[in-house]
Amino acid sequence: MESILMKIEETAALYPSKEAVVGEGLSYTYEDLLLSAKALASHLVSVNESNKPIALYMSKTPREIVAMLAVLYSGAPYVVLDIVSPADRLSVILETLDHPLVVSDQENLAAFQKEKAFDGITSDLICYDDFVKGKIDFQSLQAIRKDASSGDLAYILFTSGSTGKPKGALISHGNVLSYGQWFVDCFHLGQDSRLANQTPFYFSMSVSDIYGTLFSGATLYIIPRLYFSFPAKLIRYLNDNRINTIYWVPSVFALIDYYDLFSFVKPLFLTTVLFAGEVMANKHLNYFRSRVPEAHYANLFGPTETTDICTYYKVNRSFSDGEPLPIGRACEGLEVFLFKDGLVSKSEGEMYVAGPFVGKGYYHNEEKSSECFVKDPRGGKKIVYKTGDLCHYNQYGELMFDGRADFQIKRHGFRIELGEIETAAITNSGLMNVVAIYDQEKEEIVLFYEGKVGEEELRQTLVEKVPPYMMPEHIKQVRRLIYNANGKIDRHYYKDHFLEVLEKGE
Amino acid sequence: MNEKEQLIEVLNAVKPGIDYEKEQHLVTDHILTSFDIVMLVAQINEAFSIELTPLDLEPENFDNVEALLTLIKSKEA
Image 1 (cartoon, rainbow over the protein chains, first blue to last red):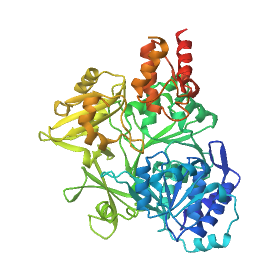
Image 2: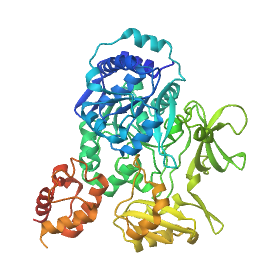
Image 3: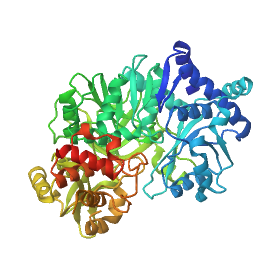
Image 4: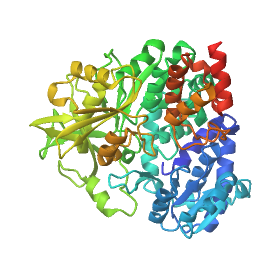
């Protein structure tokens, strides 16, 4: 199969009138979804230069998924923009794309036009609403499909680079087809699955929600963002829509645990609970497992550059609150190996990934591409992805995540994973979230956290959990931690600004 | 200090730089994030010696100072 669309058309042929995507008061059946996408695509074909990426500047509603599919029908890759991201960051992305066509909707079009940073940066701005009910140009769309190949790009997903300049990971139709099918098979998605999407569409986890749904005949519900501030509403939403499958970031689990939400309102239909994106603290997972014991749980792990995921662990035993959770083993069809000191290691090292989920590099960024997408160091010509993640195997042969290569430190001869200090701190129930950083100059560890626990009490927690050489010199409570565009703690910010934060407390 | 002044002080501690007297849509305009609300709930509980539960967390109770005051009063009663 060459195109994502062929796979979705197969699903649509089986379940034409079944709801595919629901949210924000809108609902599309499989048939509606494809018809609308084809109509919009018919216009895109007539105005876009061949295969040039098309950017989407739209609210997160089912219509944005229609627009993604429309771009695919037009033979081009799409780029989902985060509309609440600062205009300066977006303009860097648009500049990298070199005057792309931008599709927006009535709600956001004026804001885009008004923004000075976007002046002269696009080739054309198209209003979704004007073309989504237009005539379908079957002939042009068919011609595009005839030329399709599985190596064609499906989308470009910009992730924050360590230098602060976003880099665009290139993901092909073949990548999404093999990854999406793996996701469907591994977690038994089918026409009875009802997924509730939390993650933004410019974040790789949403790829699993969207294509896992559309490849299997399931239904995807887009959760209103506001519900994550008012979590009782979130659980009622799950129950009202009989949601059985969720794939969320651990911060949401932390929030639910923090509020002890399930003592007030409980999810009634959950059977599959998946998470990724950050390290899941067993404390939060144990809260879920003890109150929703009938569900299956799995920890997914991987970078945007391997479409979404490269290893997974189906939770099959008990863990204490302070224990780390395995990231398991390679997804079926992938090869994952650890490499250290020029050799494949059976114990520990940096993770490399080979196989069909591995993307095609970064858009117009040869330097970064050749740094991370490298020739297989074991020999051969195959390109593999060097993750920058440090791991080891535990006694069960499962992979354990130790931290980013760039966050491992060496102090007084001890090698320290800052993540291990964070895991220890999070066992304190008064803690919401935490970040540990290293002051290279003074050789000191600084820990920032948000939560209701006092600094001295947290110090006591750490004294009990970590050896003296890992004890932070500074423990500082902040009002709230700073998160990056993907909702993860912005470690680079703290690495660069820790002195200021220590002084001001924010 | 009356309750309203006390509440505005708490709000400013959670997120400074907002005109809380005027602002009517703290939640619907996404001025307060989910993390702000976590902190706000903890600090309101402490400042007013009440116990807001997750069931009290409704967007309409948090959209402006008046709504928050009504919520606090209902819990004090």
